[in-house]
Length: 363
Ligand code: PLP
Image 1 (cartoon, rainbow, N blue to C red):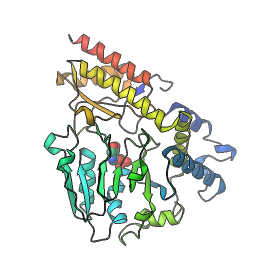
Image 2: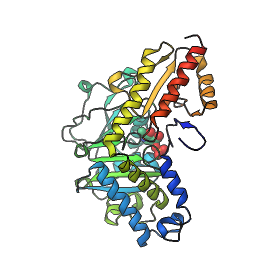
Image 3: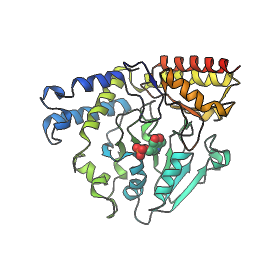
Image 4: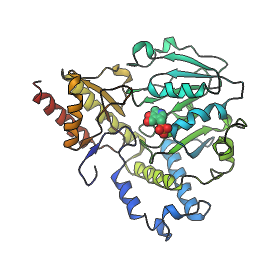
């Protein structure tokens, strides 16, 4: 919670650890005793290189990244990666599998289709996106160069709690809204990418983790600065990287290590989301439509038994310092995003407000 005593449940950009914000504020004019602000530091100089190297080391340690995986910090947000994946991972006549599990995978599919034929291996449409597509119905293309999933559907409130078996086809995951929220079996992935604005740092920064054997020359049409191969070969310095964003992400990685790492985060995230889901499930005023086994621990989507009260719920919550509880515009309803930096006290405050709101409306 910040000095202004609010809890921010926004889906993204989301709540940041207060310790990180305070340290960034302290160092704004004089970063690591260099006499320079991070905004002024040349990216080729030793001071920034130390910051970037430390961020990479901390991330590798947190995730347990084996040596055959590379880490890139790129600009452009996760949506840019929707286009860059086919151009970097496939030959021009290649094709890819995508699993349609909700709003963000549909966006990824639409963009990939501009470049290559896409086989939608499974879709949650038949379930109204209230559960992940049933594994029995997945139809993978044996000739696909990769299989793409969205590990956490931010707008729909769904998450993979077990990774799919893609039968040898490299698994590519958009982990924008759950990366760093739990430990990962990293060797199951070919590529992980994530927009930073949930659990990593500032919007605009994107993290790409790629296994060595998937690095290849990008298509000639791919902007050189967005070629994974070129950026790996130039140590992520083909052009000016987003220096301040990398610095801030580095502070978050250090904060995560100080909190006990991803195991501790997973335990805390489970407690937070389970408390909120249990309250909703026990109530006849609130409801959550998502199948229990597929519910997200990051984005709890729910609705009111009386939908006409939704705007009033959001407005009253805001007045009590519980911010940004409206659902995604494409989905509606309500949504509480419980990223790593959301304290358990924030969830307790939300539940207390929800109980009082229901009581005021006769439940
Ligand atoms: N993928 C997921 C799962 C998201 O939640 C979002 C944004 O919230 C995006 C992709 C798009 O990210 P960006 O706005 O960084 O392009």
